[in-house]
Structures are given as structure tokens and as C-alpha cells.
Length: 305
Image (cartoon, rainbow, N blue to C red; front, side):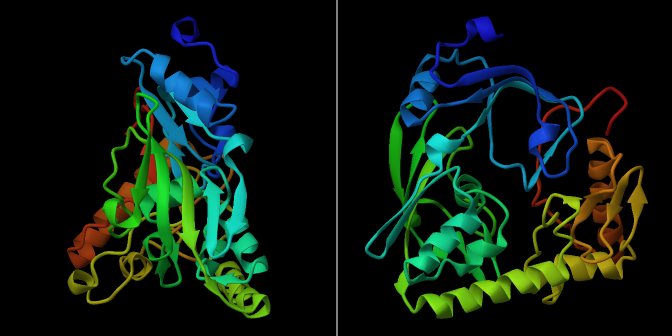
């Protein structure tokens, strides 16, 4: 396949291990991994890449499950050329590869409040834009001013927050478009006050979530409170008796049962089967269908799910 791809200034890696770049540490390889040098390099690649070659974009792999058969086509991972973070007045501009927590820290040091919740999200700005990431009562839609996205032809589009079609853990922008940058509006505040709130988020997260385990973050979206009676996913999972449930090397966290854990030898199929078993038990116990929050990509191996 690599012979069919355009020349780039960045880097191609054939049969690249995706398990090495996901927090679960599972999954098969990509046919080709592309690490673009910068936005111009990405645009050139998209313009010249044959349209019949599938393209998949990944971030730091914190909320991602790659199936054991790997991913066909080209997997794009944005790197240092997309990790800039700049402050201009009340505006914080961040590249799509910038870590959410790093953006929160830069805003704090600049005395800009409102982005503290990003300190509790272990992902990148690109992923935050794609899924309207949020925590502790705040979401991306609450602070985004506009973002930049590149379509499959390499054309750049400027999208304002109201054009994103944000809903809970979702945006309506085509999956083929690649977010490259987000610009956020902060509210002036004392940096020490902002830091105190960020520390509260960090302390709460560390005390309630298995942050040092091989996990993929929150597994399922919280259901509509009008349907669940206000119960969150973890409460429904707990009530269905799934805390500590195991399949192969995969386990439902006992610390926070909306987290799946790779105990060391799990396959992607173990984790996905465990998630589906949890969904089935919750549906049988409460009548509520949980929706995956973890993004699942790639192909199953023969004999998988």
C-alpha cells in the first residue's frame, strides 16, 4: 500500500503497532501509520491520497479500543506539529494534538478560568472536539469559540461552536473531517483560585477512578436522566452485579465500574465481549441500553466477537 501513497515530509510506518499507542495496550497493527509534519503536510497528503484508501485518525489512545485484527488503510496520528498552545487575551488556541490537561494548565497560568475541567480528561483537543468531551459538569461546547477542521480534499474549514452540532459526547461534523485546532474563550480569574479548582478535579479523579490501570476511560455514556431516573452508568452497572466481572484478561474495575481494565494479558476481544456482557446485564436488570463511549475501531480476528 505504501507505494500508492503520496510523498510526505512526515513519516510513514508500515504494520505499526497500535497497541503501543493505546492506553488499553491491546489491538492489531495498522496497514500504515502516517505522522504528518504539520498542517500543510497533512493537507497535501489528503489531496493526493487515493480516495479508495480508508483513513482513520487517532489521538493518544486514551478512549480507544483497537480490535485484534488491526486497522486497514492509513491511520493518521497528529504529533508535535499540532501540539501548540497559545494565549491571546481571553482566547486560548490549541492544536489538535495538545493534551487537554496541558491546555487547562496554560489557561490557569494565564489567569483564564473555564477550562479547569480539561484537567480531568486524559485525551487531546482533537478528541475533545470530536466527542464534546467533558467532566465535572462542564463540556467542550461550553468554552469553544471556534475550531479548524480539514476535509478529505485537504480544504480547511472554520467552524463556530454553534455549527458543531454538539450533543452529549457527540458532534455532527463528518467523521472524514480531521480537527486540527480549537480556540477557547476563558474568563479572567486569579490563577491561584483556578489552580485550587483544578486540584479538586485531580484529587476527585484519582480517588474515584483507576487512573494507573490499563484502561480506556469511561466505557459507556451516561443515559438520559429522564430514562434512567437520574442514575448514571456506573450505578446501573453496579446494580446489575457487574462490579469486578471478568472475561479473559479483562475486568470491570472494582474502584469505578464504568471502567474496563486490561489486567495484563487481555485481548481486545476480551474487553469488547466484557463490555457487551455488561450492556446485556444492565438491559436485563433495568431495561436501559447503555451506549459505548469508548471508540472501537478495526477488524476482529477470525473467531472473535
